[in-house]
Length: 176
Image (cartoon, rainbow, N blue to C red; front, side, top):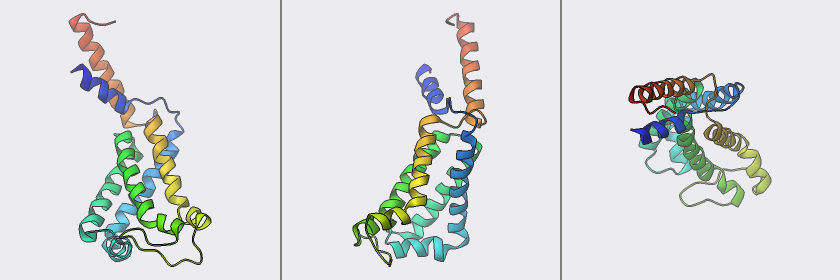
């Protein structure tokens, strides 16, 4: 029981300043929007785009990614299970960078992933094309490290969990 409480506390605890809410709104809002757009515009942003990129099983993967982005975007915005949602989206954005941007750096297709037609390739082109993805990656890493901040459901759950644990310890006579 104590181990699960400790894990839950580590997942939810945060010492981040209140301003982390701005990062959550930015990062979560972009993922929420992108996830919804994969459903709204499946040919351009969903399965059609996934097929063009070379992602296997695009008719399965696009809706899966869309659900992940939509749900995790909402979780990040409200600050619920923020570290978990950030970890899931770090995997998501890493796959996006590998499948859509790394070929720009290399100047050739990478495995099954296509090379977009651009005026130039290499480091500067990669940095330009990947600027939003890299910014999102850093924002997600920040949220994974610091948590959701004081204006979050994680903070509420962490406090209520700590209060319940303290109360239970007091009843058992094990409070420190």
